[in-house]
Picture (tube, one colour):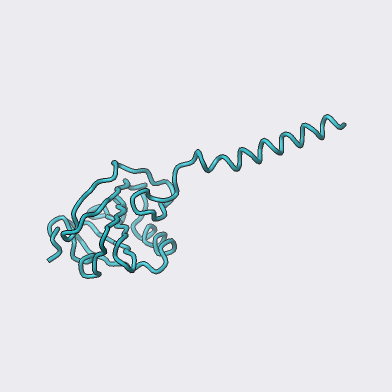
Length: 147
């Protein structure tokens, strides 16, 4: 009987240690560029890129779609980015829904698939100096200067 108790205690200790160690082996739950939360199942489609947005240097990380609906992703980010502002636009027949921080230094853009309500990609952005709401609204690949 004492041998069974010892085995049970050891098994409990091993399971507890594994449970504590598992998060260290799991992928990050935040985007490494912006520090913002990643929606479940997201995997990067490229290494972080350095770009210019409205004349300001930025780092971006793009994640390919998980076959989600745009409305589902919008709801997820609304729930997980409290205090963030949202702007909606269209570029090249794609919906662009962007959440940005009050200081304009971090953002997440959900890009839709043309003629569909599915997500094409999600891009996380981080800037050293913030963008204004107007700049977040007008920036596009066809308007990189935000004028």
